[in-house]
Image (cartoon, rainbow, N blue to C red; front, side, top):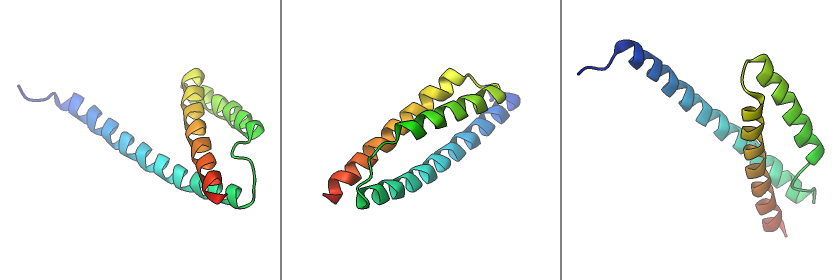
Length: 96
């Protein structure tokens, strides 16, 4: 049985979006790793809870405006923030 061409088109678009998301995340982490190195070199804390909460509030609003579940967007961002903090803590440990 051959693949439904409409479904194949949707899947190709999903695949393209997934690839773009991976590249965007890679770029984000490249920049946050530079931030972590800067923080470590300047003896700054690995996390900034005030900024993190402002970012979450900002992105929840963006999610609402985009008709995306803000709970999902917050969970996703908190996951990313935790990973960034882990990298920053590792960079701080390397700077000692």
